[in-house]
Length: 161
Image (cartoon, rainbow, N blue to C red):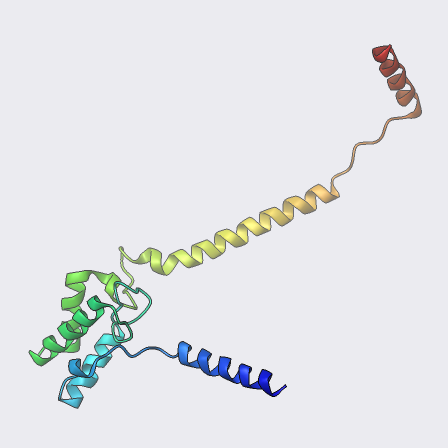
């Protein structure tokens, strides 16, 4: 029993360790000015790693994410505002680099697509259930009468003989 508890505890600890986001930022990338570093972190959290795609550049170990982190810090050190840095990165990589892309003509399907898929699935399910219900309630064809069965038996006998 104690081994089972120890195993479960070890699995829980491993699960929590794996579930926490990896901070890929190297100390060598950090800025000396804490206020500027905080701004860099804020901007980085809104930028998607183009390699990993579901992580911010702050959480990714990919070389491109490192390059983007350095680029963000260089632009901030040069005096750009957070919005200017974001505009620069978006101009270079497109709206896809943003973790929360704006709603416009190019990204409308990112925002509307999941809702359309949900509606289409619900409509398909409704139609399928309705068809099955109608089929289950449809009247069945009556069976053969005794006279018809006798006639059919005679025909089949003639065919055999």
